[in-house]
Length: 144
Length: 126
Image (cartoon, rainbow over all chains, first blue to last red; front, side, top):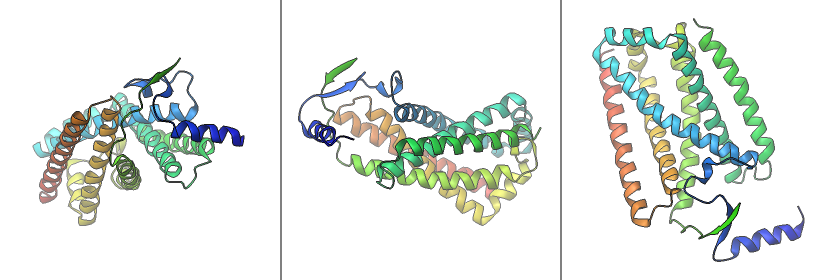
């Protein structure tokens, strides 16, 4: 990067007053139009995170069926092992991998471990996620 | 379109919250891997789902009990920090931010308390 560009960035960071941003607003992170790969990854990761919070409470509700005994749990298993629900398990695994591995990438960058390897890290974690998702999907769907 | 708008107020402890999110995230990643492999991927059944008796035997193991309890605490902590971050991005006032933080802390404590009760009851049945 040109040293003049770096100076311009530092000056912009130090400057008081208004900040120039694309599409400002409370849900600007949701708008991925004309964004770079890192910003798109952030939006997808955040959406996956919200889905995982929903799943946390759904999981606790489902596990509560165990309190009602083997009959209630058996009824749940009959529904949970249908192809549609196993497909939802694959979707869950997708959310876990995207959110978890992208979060690891952000942590490595944010803590200064790999601050200048953003794009390489993004493609590495997404490749690992794709491989693990394929393995997981085959394991889950192939178990029928 | 590029539009000028006010710089958001700097939140005291914002950096601390980010570090806590990152730290809990790394812990969740390790614990969710253990949970997925130990609980689902080693079981030879459809979808890796255990029967009622198998679940009780699993959670009755003291090592698993500790790991799952730790997982519950860390995943709830991480989830509440993530929700807080999403809520703060809505541009809440300082008062609303404090209320949101308190509400999420309460929700987190209630979630962990319910989860502990659930795990404890199931472990006692094994």
